[in-house]
Length: 122
Image (cartoon, rainbow, N blue to C red; front, top):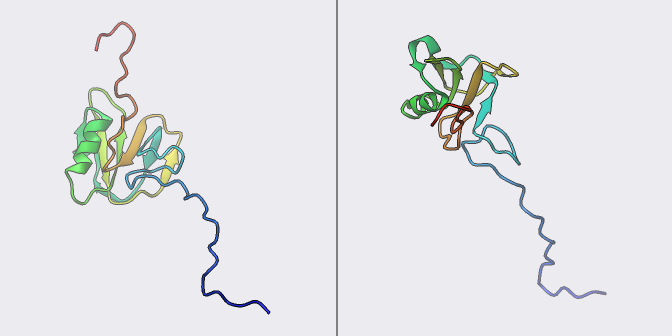
């Protein structure tokens, strides 16, 4: 008969599953906070034609300044595109080349940022 030693046998620990920051809209390993060629439909706090912005970054900043906004979708346009401020990330549609969408707290480089076209100084 085995005697009880009073000590629990420890289970081998498993490595923790990779986690993304709260601002991420995609899962590991990318953990991106913005999605190029993607739009979020519905859940508008402010519709795009009422909030025209010159870039995805300006749209993200508009969301960051708006308490009710959690996500945004920017219609790629020049000199400006519509910036939709969203309360939820739902009805996600990929492969829409005229949109980029992301989260309120997105601090990483957004699609199109830091790119200088050949022959056009920066």
